[in-house]
Length: 352
Image 1 (cartoon, rainbow, N blue to C red):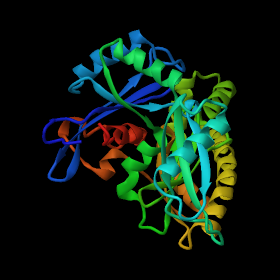
Image 2: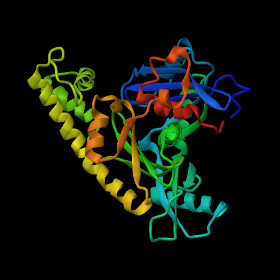
Image 3: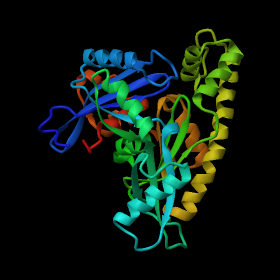
């Protein structure tokens, strides 16, 4: 994409179940610059976005300094067709694409021409084998058309549908460790938590964790203290793993209860992470996993990165837009939010 012929990039839109994250960039002297960021509450929480909400979104983005109506969307994780495929040594070119399409077709019981697909070969091999591994992802035409129809009926131009994991890896690339070492990226969303393993700029592993999401934790706190989800999230952000003093209406005993629930919640996550971490360290790379990047709304819980670092024994840090690129003064108060990283990665999409 030639940013010198277009002042702004496409608008990256990460449509979550509760919040829409939007980002727009520019390109100058070989570097990205953040020009506009926005976090917008959903009018229909948890539902697929509808035409009226898209119209409202378009008006809001215009008021907040975004330019144009060309957007890149992320397909929701539950709508993706995924496959990990082993290739015989020496297979390259067109046969690879054909094998990937046929394998996705077989795995998901769809006709080979019923979906769009992207794929990439991983830069590492399992130790002791000669096969090449490839990751393929696809989106069924009926799912893609539903997204396109809602946005285009509101006169927004969907330039591309992208994959959340690819966008996350793209935006985090400046913070990954050099290959052959591996960087883990943990996307802590409201309704799901996804682990990515990246080597250089390539995703070599992806897994949606089975351990409870932030939504489940908020519900548990809500029931314990009779709170709405929004208030429960505020309590989590206030207490975290490090609060020591009374917070609003919470006394020290209540703070300890909240912290213990957080420790139990993350304990299940840590145990689940140990399995793919061990696999990566022993089978995929001599250097192993050397850094864990936290993105998504749950990454800002106070003391969370330190807690994970102590539990996993590796470097853990948040990743926010301000860590990876320059920004205009208008967005300075928003660039430290790790929840914006997928939207920034979508705005970096280069295929349009």
